[in-house]
Length: 314
Ligand code: NDP
Ligand code: OXD
View 1 (cartoon, rainbow, N blue to C red):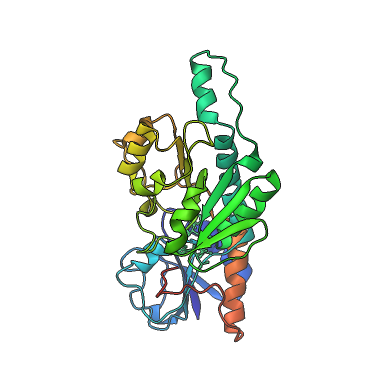
View 2: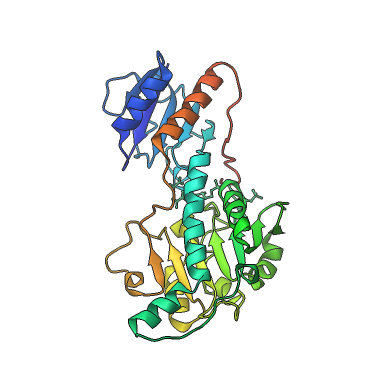
């Protein structure tokens, strides 16, 4: 019985040390260690290599360091019948909401406009709308979307959400399904994407979507904030919309290709605010606490929690 760690682009050794401390006698191995593949019950992954699952014939669950599992689900050798547990964590939600609140408040107060005025030494008393006059539309009303709504509400913003199934959250005007998408957009000034990447949501941040957002409330035009996945956005369309005024600004944490290529024109656009996929990081202490409990509970006969619905894709 053992847990195998297979983490790329993060400090696997540090995670392994914490898992060993948390799991006591339960064996924890890393990719480079000598181990018998048949003894692996659980694999903890982030950006797994093609051979990650080779020989793991007794796997009970795949544990995903990421909250988003789109890339994992595309892994060509992902075992078909093994449940996937994704990361759901208050610390991760807090960090994501920190990002969302920062971007939303920055755009609400017309940061792009006043930065340009400052550069031009221009004194122009243009008053932003009150938060109560500004509507934030959250696409994806799951764990992260609901947390963001909860933290934006006390600031006074008008809130609306869009999800696959209807959601009733206090103080949030809920819209659900494709049929309600245009109505949702029509009243939105700042569009925040917290959707999972699935075939249905791929490319949803496109020119047509941007054209349907409410105009006239925020000087410069409506704004998008994407902290979900680069696959949600069409970057050519974002370029076009930022240049022709369909969008006033965009905050992007994720990109079609990561790292964002040097040649991308997005780097140069003043009303495009780029961060390198850092909106929220899975913290090793809370991550180890969360997954160790899940593993030990499961070994004690309890059901797994936060299991990905593979058919749905999230
Ligand atoms: P959840 O699974 O909890 O929530 C997903 C939400 O999206 C649900 O409300 C769901 O609707 C909705 N949704 C899914 N498909 C559709 C659709 N076709 N149309 C409308 N709504 C849809 O996910 P999380 O909140 O935990 O995470 C969201 C995403 O955030 C992750 O998948 C990941 O890609 C991204 N992420 C990015 C990070 C970063 O650092 N940039 C860090 C962590 C996560 P319903 O409620 O009806 O199921
Ligand atoms: C995640 C991420 O999905 O960091 O957790 O992007």
